[in-house]
Length: 319
Ligand code: AVJ
Image (tube, rainbow, N blue to C red):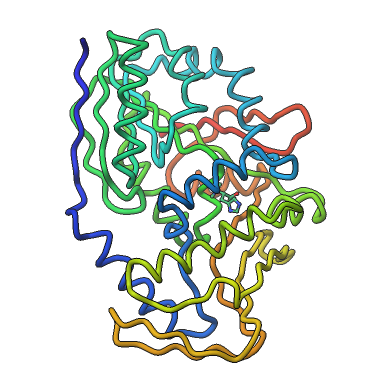
């Protein structure tokens, strides 16, 4: 049987410290904000999986359509022997690429969730015994030290998650990805595209209220981890399109004037009636914007694939 290695680059208590810092920072500024990475505890990850199956939420299906159609081209263009996947989660869609990469020697999934890494890693090894899996428990927005593996290397960042970063954060992130690549290596990037506002807003405000529950789940995480007394029912889910920045914003609007206590931070936070806590941006892209952001990071766009309806894009770029 091939090896399954798991390396923890995050200390066990780093997550807790990072959450405390983000909550203290985010809830004492104007407007109040919480970063979207805290949505994904076990329940939040389950809610996200349900979102990907909603009729209104097209990005997952659109990206899968591209991967199914183009996995062979991606494999031929890269000849990758190492595949690094940032924010790998369940690695479900990545399987199309893995299956097409006939020369693949090592798969390096990177995620903050140890359980997702272990599950996905073992499932993969069972099916492809010649493949090595070296999973990294790490925050992909931080410095990454990759294991020594054979090139060429393909780094994949799928799902459109890059849209959760602000433009300045994307520049830092793409530069750090660039630093992982040598000549002959490539980046496979998933980006959701600008489209009709109604389609976009519906994708983030579904009729069944799954996205609303996902958004409010961040309050439950802060309650559990920091002993806070947020009542998720005291907030309304808000999804809006910011046409200037071309991103979707999710917010939680306080239904009344209220004070929330966060004992672990020795903090009391006042909300005015109608005050909005900003929880996520999900930027939507255009080809020229993606090209220029990649270029600013020292990466040159070589392939651009979209689904049949032009809703989502996968790009391949190189140093
Ligand atoms: C996982 C970051 C790609 O921004 O569309 C889904 C998260 N938020 N519905 C996205 C999300 C609300 C999703 N990403």
